[in-house]
Image (cartoon, rainbow, N blue to C red; front, side):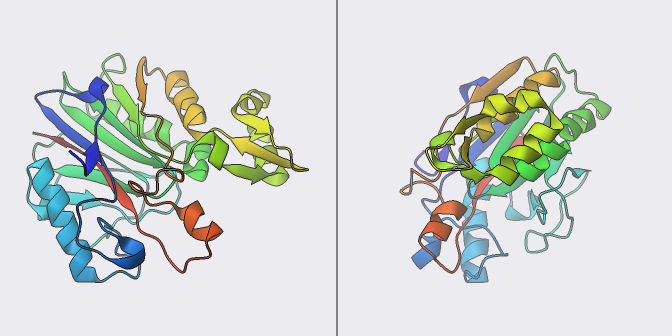
Length: 257
């Protein structure tokens, strides 16, 4: 499918998932074409139609597609029932569920989407791991919430989706120091830039480390750079470089069939 990519690790008859691209939607201009963010200035009718396209691909009704108001936090919500797709009422950055037919999803445009699945117990999770959420525990909290629903840590698989790549993610000294203050080990995820007081940050490797350190043994990293792949992915940093007024977001989704 041109409009989403999957992880072979998560492929299972009981669980459907997709890291959606920016393709196969109805939006135009900066939002071309599968933009799903009501927080953007895109036409709301187009956003709803794009969400319907994704819902159809996932085999659900759009009203069973659950998306948060994301705030770069470590807050996780357990979803027992869907809420209307036009109302991103809950604030947070991760979702878990054991209910069939409810698709949980996160929006990204460079940040790291992570999809979790315990296919034996039919419990799934999805996290939006920007650097703020990743360093403050959104991944650990997602795993904990899945375990509280009955997931077995030995069964949980995690796929790290398309996100900004190390060579595209140049950061300053203050950013670097924030991670070193948490742990000197975090220096492993930075490479010194040729510019003074600049570093390149490997956020996907940092996320993989966080997952492994939390007991996840099966991890898949798709290794797709959202900034470099303009034909397939929205990128916040690309929009900043070009001084564009706004940008679209793509969706990462998982559902127990």
